[in-house]
Length: 202
Image 1 (tube, rainbow, N blue to C red):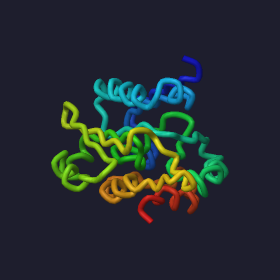
Image 2 (cartoon, rainbow, N blue to C red):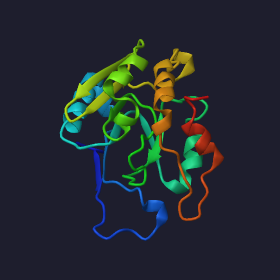
Image 3 (cartoon, helix red, strand yellow):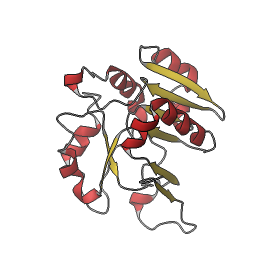
């Protein structure tokens, strides 16, 4: 498949010396071109993501529209989507290990495992709090769950009537376990990025 990117990062057998990296975890990063979704349809992408996730011992994961950027250009990349496309996730151009066992934002497909699922009250607790239109929960083996928002990923374009109400509802539930960007190696996180990460909570 053209433009498919697969990036896996495993933990080093020798502990890293930097405190900023103490929460690192193994990460599998898969990126498909938007054309794949357009050609195959969201049902196919949903099924593919579920098939892949079924075999992975994940703490969390997601599938969604993303804009990829290097760390040095994140603020400039954010300007391309901030005012018009709140449903697009701004992420790195490859696997990042420092998210740890936290949850990296709110998405179309949200895979949750342990320990975050336990912190949120388990599947039963989530069902009670997310019994809302546009939100579906699918229990998975191994004490895991998939939360899907709508039938397809949405960019959140206001002119198209995409209010992303399910995203806001899920964000309120996930807030205690959401990943919060932190300074890395002396580089402070720009306020614009911190504000963007909380866009569904404000």
